[in-house]
Length: 295
Ligand code: NAP
Image (tube, rainbow, N blue to C red):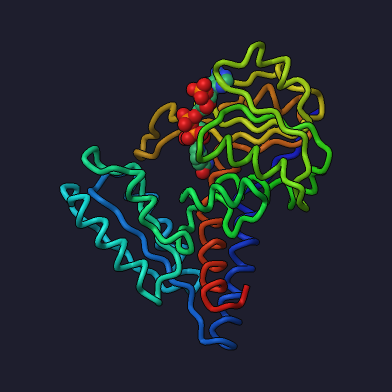
């Protein structure tokens, strides 16, 4: 079997088009423009490229976008006062502080200071808790993107055996949580694996849907995958640099071998990656609608 590729770039493009149309309607009918503030401390090239992508996408979709670049030496107190100001700013519906933050900043304190209603990354404990009890306003972006890839590719999630490799707070735990909920696009039986899992392959072998977020090249090889499984590769591992200076990346799954066994698979790049920023935009749109009493 050669797997069908799940084209994340195309699915993300479709969702962005839907968002764009909704923004046009919101402006026309309610004079409402979703607003996103992006905050960057320092000039780390990776963070700079991520935040530029978020700001550019927000503008393309017709959002109001405010970019705040601060020196790396900004104090905790000054960053917290900026968040306080953004929390009160009615034009801003979503606040995104680009991680990682410099070492002198207490990341948790910064995340907890964001008004949960403007926490479009869905990292605030209030939003994490609401997800856990099945009452989420916002889903964290990468896991939400994974769920959309599955739904929009026609994968049957209800009743499926889902195995997740990785238990981070930003990918593994929330995707397990999302897919086990008693909800449409969920209702799966979920197993969560990590480095203390005994005999990883015995679990991955059972998976109808295998989601890999380990951050390790070839953490999953073909002998660990069931014939016909749907494989979602979240990993981003840099294996080199092209002559033009671009990062060459691969996922966590041994793609060439696994695609011969799986029924569907996400490529890296072009699979999960393009979905993350798109889901951030969807959360910002939802935040604007919630603030206006329209959701
Ligand atoms: P992380 O915080 O480093 O967590 C990795 C998890 O994988 C940990 O729970 C670890 O277990 C587990 N793990 C590592 N090696 C394993 C192995 N051989 N067998 C079983 N479990 C293993 O990583 P993350 O933030 O979740 O990110 C995972 C990958 O996804 C990274 O490559 C990251 O760059 C990528 N990512 C991509 C996107 C995107 O938009 N495309 C977004 C976020 C992350 P322990 O807990 O036991 O250590």
